[in-house]
Image (cartoon, rainbow over all chains, first blue to last red; front, side, top):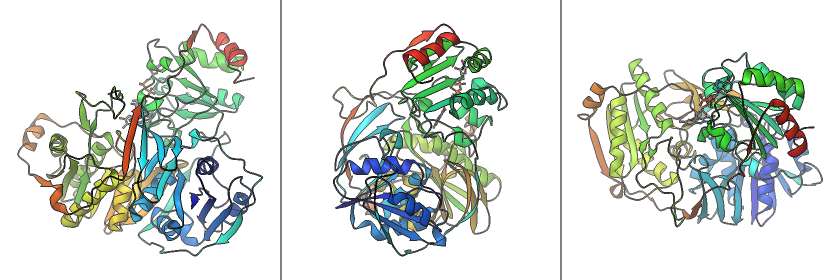
Length: 309
Length: 250
Ligand SMILES: Cc1cc2nc3c(=O)[nH]c(=O)nc-3n(C[C@H](O)[C@H](O)[C@H](O)COP(=O)(O)OP(=O)(O)OC[C@H]3O[C@@H](n4cnc5c(N)ncnc54)[C@H](O)[C@@H]3O)c2cc1C
């Protein structure tokens, strides 16, 4: 049997998490196919046909798929599902929205956010905000899976030569319609793909003070993140949130500034290669996971750090 | 308009959960239990819609053991009008929970169902979406703002890139994100009043739903632990360690 990966894209480019998901699919036995549904998204198929490890691309190009709404997208995936042993998507807000809907349409129990493939039917996944790792075996005939991107190194975006096949739209739903979007624009790397992330917490005191982090981020080519407390306080927008219920990051370097280190925050960053914590409270739990801890007032430490880089 | 709010009893979010000695499951002996935080947000949203005159009745429902009545009472104290416990001693997976909930929804026919986007025990983030599929309802997940019109709702969703607004036709399933609202605390008089509110207990066995689990839990272990780090004395020290020892900046 073959394995189907659901592509995530913006009708122009593939999202990086798709490459990590293909990597997970390659660990299973079988050809890997990629499903692209979107509107005027031929360029995505062209890009994807070069991705390593994919043998076939299915593309369904239809105005109804422009905004990747869950209802129609799940119906479309269902129309091809019986050809596959596994259906995978990244555990992003797109994958989390669509795949459980698909899974119920197929009457299977989805396996969420896997971090390791043990065998065809057995997977590891974090539970309780990553406090524990569960090994679970699925007895469903089709395995519907979301993949934690940071747990799988991405495949190469070149070197592949997949064929492209058009498939018809199926069972388009009008239950939901798209109204609008506010997508953050930034010249900095995307949080989940950046090799360095610098995050601020409640200790930053205001959104204005985030410029202290931004100055450092620009010198390091880093992305800027935040704790929930900083987002809730309105310092920065929601797409900055790192944690159990925000984004999962695992960069080479993660710098936590004015963040106490609640388990829900650690859940989103503790697999980073090197962790630095800057906090004025020497007992802050963040120091328990930090490779390098600096007990200092951030308002002194950050300008100094910026200067020395 | 009737609103149904499915909720879940979970380990309190402050508890650090550990595996059992034999690694067969997590150790939930003597840990503090509470309503899942996302469910509190769902209850709050429903109650606010009632206070605003948009909703006429708020029904809290849960699928679980008898002790889940405690969380239903909390929902009643927060302002739900009545509660339903679909009772079972088995530990159900999200698919089975969604099947039981869809039965309840068929009986209650609410116009809106609001539930948490995920429960902080299994972190699955599935039940709402599954429920929407089973009922062929529209879904609006990860909501940070909900505006109800006549036959539709306009919902702003927290997505990876920012915010997205969609319009869902009613009946619909909405799942809550953290910033939808800040839940209130139950006042003592309301906790007392909640004791007298109606709480129906329905054994799951009588519902005719396939609740068989599709997954087996083989083991639960601790994640790989990190090597203990060090404290640096100064920013200068930090920068040199990052350059020379960790080699993560140049
Ligand atoms: C269901 C649920 C889901 C959650 N999901 C997430 C999530 O995804 N991500 C997340 O981050 N949180 C999440 N949380 C919240 C989490 O529990 C914590 O409340 C939050 O992470 C705290 O943020 P913080 O560390 O910025 O704030 P605080 O805990 O208030 O810590 C602020 C820190 O800043 C330090 N500080 C203050 N001033 C200075 C200064 N001048 N110089 C240096 N240090 C200073 C303090 O010593 C303190 O350690 C969730 C909670 C729940 C209940």
